[in-house]
Image (cartoon, rainbow over all chains, first blue to last red; front, side, top):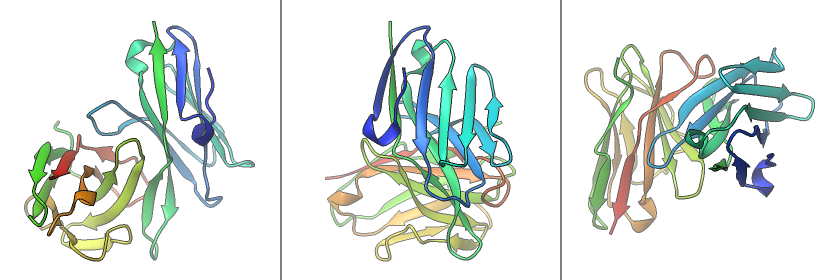
Length: 115
Length: 115
C-alpha cells in the first residue's frame, strides 16, 4: 500500500505486505530528516533518519528514500506487522530565529495493519 | 538509562487556573524542546531551551505561556489562566547537541484537559 501524505492521511495494508508512506517537505535548505512513529497515548519514537548527502538509508525492516529534486521523502516498511500500526510523521530541521533550528513535523499518516 | 520523563501524564484544570508541566531530559542531554499536539494533528514547536537560557520561543504564545530550564531540576512549561483551547498533549524532547545534529528523543507527554 502507498500513501500520498496530505491527500491520503490513512493507509491500510495487509499483514505481511510492504508499506510505503510518503512525505513532501517544504524547505529546500533542509539537510536532515527524521521519521517518527507515534502509537496511541505515547510520544513520537525515532525510527530512522537521513541526511541530505544520501538518497537512501536502511534500517531493520525500514528504508528511507530522499529525493531532493522534488523535495520528497518516503518510508518503506517491509513485511508490515500488527505492531507497526501507528501514526507516522516525517520531520525536517529548519532554520528558525537566528541560527536556531526547529524540528518541524508533517501532518502524519495513520497506518493500519489488517489481519 | 531512563528516557525523557514527563509528569504528570494527565492534568485537569478548570478555566483560569494554572498548569505546570515538568520535563526531565535524558541523562547527558542539555537541550530541551517543547511541542504541542492537538487531536488528529501533528506536533507544533513551541520553545527550545538550554540550561538557564531560552534559545527560541517563536512557537510559544506571547501571553500566558512561559518556559524555563533551570541549572538544577526539570524544565517547566507554565500556562497561566488556562482556557479550553489549551487542552492538548504537550510533549517534551531532548537532545545532546544543538538542533540539526541528532534526533530528538520524546517523552510520553502530558495530556492537559481544561474544563
